[in-house]
Image 1 (cartoon, rainbow, N blue to C red):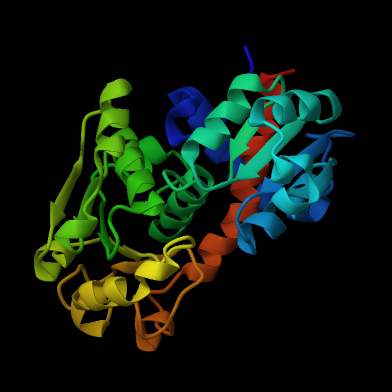
Image 2: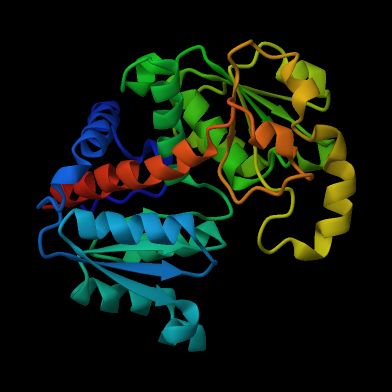
Length: 314
């Protein structure tokens, strides 16, 4: 059975611990690249959405593991002219050793995995962003000095997410919180509260919910270890721009919000950031902000994920 990485809990606890330890090791020994983890392998990268950090970190990571990245997009393949996902997955499986996909609907990546005979990696869907979450968890533990085991280092930590709490990052934090024993506090407009899909996902995998939702920014920020936000207008939601901006203004991350958190509270954002909208420039410029550490750790964590999948499927 082919092992894929479509959501955070696709690996066992033992595998997760090993992947995080590997990411730390790959980061500390990066000067010794390339390694032989993907020696001679060809990995395709299919993008239905625009990307900077995801594309560059995966492409560089594959090369640093000794593999060969191949960039694909909807417009340059037959899938853009109506070829089915099933046929595309079967064909690409004959050429490639793995497939990394950034798509809109989560069902697209699930269908790729269903018909693929090589591992498929979720590089972002509208439902989940698991690679980002793993890298963010690594960054939190580095800054908190807890060690690389997320089941120990993150237990009991409070992460408060502000803004669109129905987005893929909020969903992924809900899932990660249940896995790692974190307290996930979601704060935003009632209309943008988490949907039923993520609740059903937790039930399906027998994960106990560890999240709460509030429309009160003070309640959301109280005693937080981390304040997290994302863009208010995600790709594909541009027509809703004005309404989103108006309804989410009370949930902007600013200096006043941090007066309610723990003194050493960190600020995180998966980027791109929009100063003056979801976060102020002063917060972005502060020592609390660890955005660029998050971005860098995408490279190291994704290398660890790809190396693990290659080994598990060998």
